[in-house]
Length: 312
Image (tube, rainbow, N blue to C red):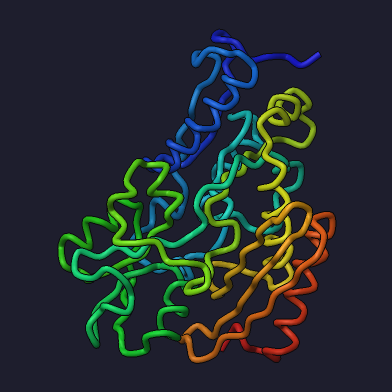
C-alpha cells in the first residue's frame, strides 16, 4: 500500500528558486493534491540554488552546458534531502545520475518561442543591424541563419532579469519560451509567438518532468497518477534524438514531436553555431516507435552534416 505524505511527514519537492521554477513546482504539487485528495500542508517546496543560477556573468558554454541547472538538485535527491525534483525538461541532460529516473511528465504547454520586443512585432520587422539578446545557442544560430545582419549579444538570467535588460536598452529584442510566460501569467509580454515552421523549438521545450529515486515505490505510485502519456511519448522521441546527437547547451539543436492519434511526426534540425548552415529532416511513424524514430532521425542528420559539423 502506498504511503501517502502528511502534514507531519510532507513530500519534499526540490526545485530551482526562480519564479518560473517555483510555478512549475506549485503546479506539480497542485496536481498531486487533486489526484490524491491531499492538503497543501502534505507538501513542502524546497528551493535549491544551482550553478547556473549563481553564475550569470558568463555564457553557459563556458561553465559546463547542460546539467548546470540540475546537478545540485539531483545531488539533494540522491542524498535523500528531497523526495522528488521538478525540472524544465529542456534543461535536462539525456543521461541521468545512477539511481534516478524521470517517468512522470506533466501535460506539455505551448512549445513555441516568444518574440519579445518593445520596438518590433516580429523578427522580420527588426531594422538592419539591430541588437538582439539571447543566451540560447539554438536561438542565436537560427536567428543568424535567417537574419545575418543582426548583432547578437549574450543575455542570461531568469525571465524577469532578461526583461529588465531589455528595458535598460541592452538589446531591442529577445526570446523567451511561451510556456514559461504562460505559467507566469505573463503572455502579454510577448510581441508574438514564433511558429515552429519559422523557428523550431528546443527539444522538450514546454515540458515539465518530475524526477524520483528509482527505488522509491511510494513516489512512483504517487507520480503515476499525474503522468501525461502523450507528453511522455513526444519527449521520449525528442530526447532520443538529442541523445544520439550528444546534445548540450554548447550545441545548436532543435526538435519537435507531435502526435496525431497513434501517429508521431518528428522534426529535427542541427545548425552550425554561426548559422551558416542548417541540416533538417523529419520522420513519421507509430508512437510506439518514438525512441527509435528519434535515434534514426539523428543518425540521418549526422550522416548528412559530416564530421565536425556541430563543433565548427
